Amino acid sequence: MNSSNALGFAIFGLSLKFLPVWFPTMMGTSSPESVRSLWMGLMSFVLMAIAGSFFMSRAWVTRGMWAGWAIRPMAAASAARRQAASAPPRAGVSV
Image (cartoon, rainbow, N blue to C red; front, side, top):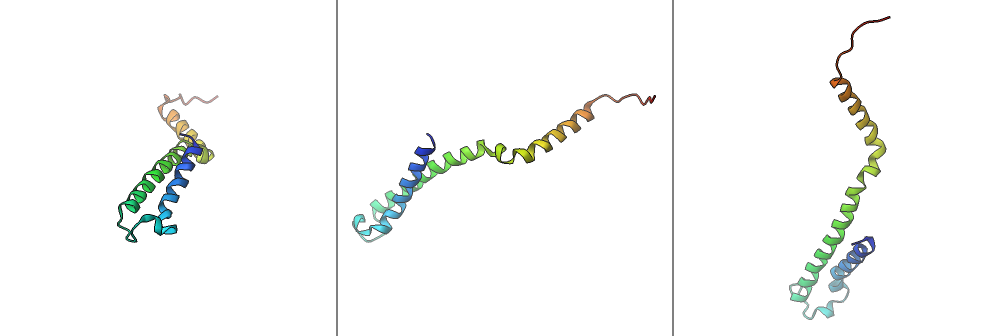
């Protein structure tokens, strides 16, 4: 799946969500409990969940790039501290 597919899923899911509101005569009965409107609500949820999971996975992958300039200096400082703590002690000889 790519971004275009996920965007298509999201748009189609939103249209399924609002189709009973925009065109109530297409649902057959006027009750919101009709099988057609329940199916459209369920499929809207499924399509939006697929699109949302794709976009959230992309956001998770690129999270380091968004906050990288804030995380890298802290990571380098903590690595330097760990390296200094694990190094053997130096002799206290001054010249």
